[in-house]
Amino acid sequence: MQPPLKWAGGKRRILPLLSELLPKSGAKRCVEPFCGGAAMFFHLREHHPDFASDWELGDANRALISFYEMLSAFPQEIAEGTATMAANQSRQLYEARRSLFNSLIHLERVGHMHWHQKVVMAQLFLLLNKTGFKGLYRVNRAGNFNVPYNDGNNWKPSSTELLDSLLPCARALAGWMHFRAGEFDVDRVKADDFLFLDPPYVHQDGHTAYTAGKFGEKQLRELAESCKTISARRAKFMLTHTDNNLAREVFGAFSITEIVVQRAMSNGKAAPEKVGEIVVRNYE
Image (tube, rainbow, N blue to C red; front, side, top):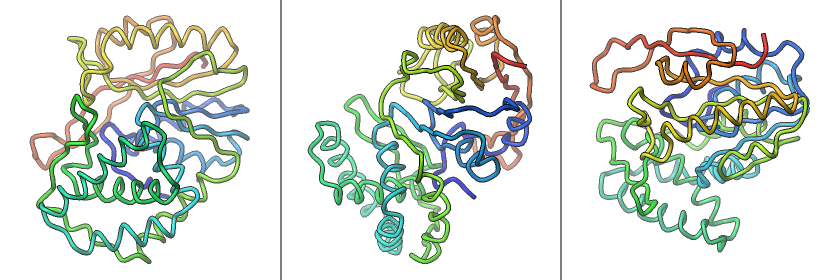
């Protein structure tokens, strides 16, 4: 099963390594509060479906959570509408669709959306993700999605092809599944929960790697305090972060495992870059 979205900092390439570090006993509930592309979630649902009996995807990106929620209920409508739009592409069309997407984002924020508008927003989310520059999700200070068109993209699936790829994801998102749009709230953590924490990576200078300055050193330190609360509540967590002195200092109270990840170079070079990352856990 391939996750439906491309996502900066996604975990697809290191899932085998992370799987080896999962708690052997599973959990009552599995929670991803920084879900992004949700590669870990889809991996667990496919390869370890009995890992948890209850599942929750959360993110501060409300449009992202709405996409997953709509995909769970309306995969065929999303596939058909997205494929229809993908058949006709140009920079001008992309910008018009991006503008419509931003209008729907603002409607969703104030809570004035009908379900069919949410389906259209999900179609646009998927289309912009596949045809925008490097699949990035970036917003300006006004909260508008502003990623430019990828002139070199050739993403034009048929509705049948797209539905075939989306259906396994839609099924994984169904059942004992909960969606939560908003900031991570440690007060919702319960005993026997397992949390996979994949926050935006913060550089040594305190700046984030791929968000618009909303998650920095202060937020990373607050997350470390939340991890202590998670432990006090007899829940388990696994957290991933780029390997630097700041992260090692902030999460020094927990078990740290070093791994090496191959990431595509942002400057367009063919050869991937090897990057050190750490996996932080409160269990062995």
